Length: 174
Image 1 (cartoon, rainbow, N blue to C red):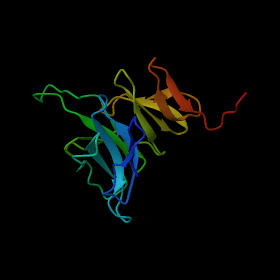
Image 2: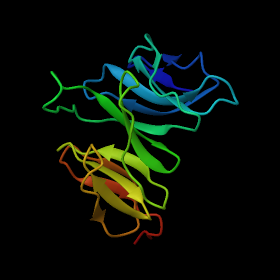
Image 3: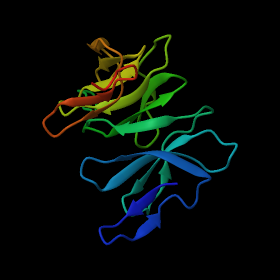
């Protein structure tokens, strides 16, 4: 379930209409939430978006396979489009994918033999993710795939000082 905890301590479930929901991602300005959810137990996980107060829920992906770990990407602009658009990245079938918020423009971003997970948008707009027990970087359109951190790492996050924090699966406390 997705739950909203208000500053006064009140708890409200935002995902009442779903069998299960996971992977919440809050939009940069705090107004919207991306998440992965199943309407029924046998459905694959799909990506949905809602207003931060739980209203206006809409489905973004329509895949036959699970779509998980969504992240808002930086706005995209190309010379052949009249204005920039928002899109999201997510994990499906072990690869990163992206799609516009209206569900159009699907694009597979990574093509590796390993499982790509944990996408994270950095403050400069680049995306990093875990793959082959390392962190890799890729542009929002899937170009310039490159090693970001050459050590065992997963579940990256970024601090307000633009530092990357990650889980070191085989590390030890000293």
